[in-house]
Length: 70
Image (cartoon, rainbow, N blue to C red):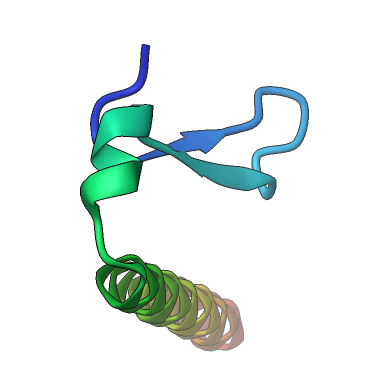
């Protein structure tokens, strides 16, 4: 069973995410707090994706420079 505020990734489609929490926690959690947590998670995912894309780009640039030097 998922713990409070777990994000579960689909095995078949890793891009498919869903949040899970026990019903009693969900009932006691104010909507505004849940929405803020969702927004925070979304921003963190976007930042991680941007960082990953930047690292990929940096690696490609390094590889191209390395190939030109040989």
